[in-house]
Structure formats: C-alpha cells, structure tokens
Image (cartoon, rainbow, N blue to C red; front, side):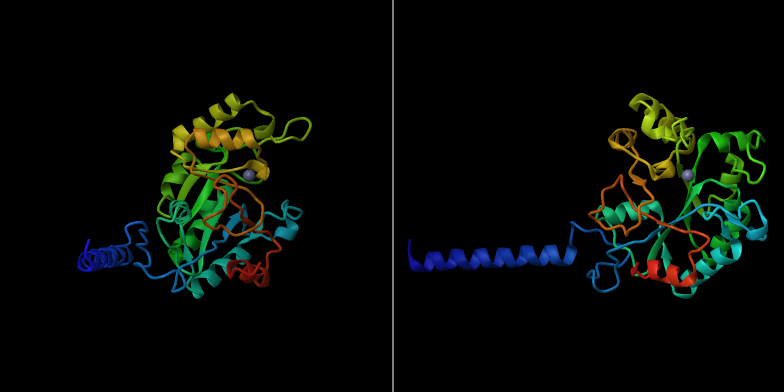
Amino acid sequence: MGVFNILKRFILFTIITVLLLGFIVTVNPFHNNFLTYGLPLNNGAQEKIPVLCYHHVYDGNIKKSVFKDSNTVLPLSLFEKHMKYLHNNNFYTATLDELADFMEGKIDLPKKTVVLTFDDGYRSAKGLIYPVLKKYNFQGSVFIIGKYSEEASNNIHRFENFQYLSYEDMQEISDVFTFENHTFDMHRLDINKMPSLIVSTPKEVETDLLTLQSKLDCKYFAYPYGAYDNTALTVLQETGHKLAFTVNEGYVEMSTPKYEIPRFGMFSYTNMLEFRKIVNLKA
Ligand SMILES: [Zn+2]
C-alpha cells in the first residue's frame, strides 16, 4: 500500500471521528436535559437535592395544645416562614417524578431545588398547607396511610385531635399534591414495638402495598417510622414502586440508592437558621 493511500485513509478516519463527536456534543442523544436546555451542569443545574419531610401543621397555640410534646407538629407560622423563604429566594419545588428522572439522568434540575413531602396524610394538608403551596405555585407529595384515609372517606375518625384526608379531599387538592404510599395498614408497631413492615412476611407486605397502589396508583413509598429491611426493598421493587423514602438525613444525588432516599425531617424546632442551612446544601 502506498504512502498516499495510508494518508487518504487517515484523513477519512479523522473526518468521520470529528463529525461523530460533533453530533454527540450538539445533539447529546444520551442526555435529555430539557429543563436547562443542554446547559452544562455547572451552569444552573443541581447535583444534590434536599427532600423535606413534614407531618402535621397546627394553627392554634401548640404549647397549650395536645401537641405540645410532639415535635413533628409544626406551628403554621413556622411552616409559612419556610415556604416564604423558598419563594423569596426563587426555589423550585420538584415533583417526585422529576426527582426520579433526575436520578436516572433524564433531566437536570435547577440550582435551588427542593422536594416537599408530607407524611401520614393529615387533613391539615388540605386546610392549612394547601393554601400556602397554592399561593406560591409550589408542588408537593403526601404519603397516605390507606386505612386511615379510607375511614375518613367513610366519616370515621379514629383520633379526636386530628383527622386524615379522605379520597374526596385528595381530589380537591390534586392540583398541588400527588398522593403516595405509606402502607395501607402497616403504620403500626407490634407488641414488642417492632414496625409492622419489618415483622410481616413478604406476602403480607406485598398484599398491603398493592392494596393502596390499586386505589391511588402510587409510584413512591415512604417507610413508616423510617424502618426498612431487605424484604421491604425487594417487595417495593416487585410492586413497581420507583423510589422509597427513609428518614435518614442527607441529600439526594444520582448515585443515591433508589429504595433508601434520605430526607430532612422538619420539626417544631427547625428554625430559619437551620432551614436555610438545609435548603442551601450546607447541612
Ligand atoms: Zn408516618
């Protein structure tokens, strides 16, 4: 083969390589980052996401109420301060679908993104939390305990001091919230104070998870009391849940295990100093 032929092949190879690289860089078929329109990660997209975990919100004087010893109950005024801070500082509240897509590398999320979650499905999600989120155009997800919401739908209220969202309530506030799985009836401790999810057989767990899934079409799960084991992880995967949330503190990254998503618990003592640290990735 002459020197000329080798040179020709080399030039051809170089041209094809350059064209191919150019195509990948411009079109980027492997990364559908529609939120930031292909901007590189250091130019506006987020790498770590804080997921916040609220429970009940109360608008009376907590110190004089039955909730005075319950640190998961937030005064409405504190919850309003949290949300006002997010609004004033241009935070984006991502949905769980967006969080799942972010973790799969399908989309980028903006800097200053948080995810808002509310555990147990208290009726304060409708009366107190919904108006605040609606005002700021925020979105959130409520983890429902199926049996309690089913009872509420039949006008049965098992506790005197607070009520749960009925299915009708959920429909009314579905422009702000999605409703997800916190078990149908495994938000309980057995006589040895062990969480029901942990002491039940895989078949029992599966039956429970599918019960609420069939009613609410849930894709996401939060572990009652934050307790989980390998059985729970396997059953969640088998029943088609995409992510499962713990109460271990930490930020969500692409590499975070999908059935052990950490969250920051929001408590009556989560003041603004603490809150700012968490949402600004300094916790
Ligand atoms: Zn719970």
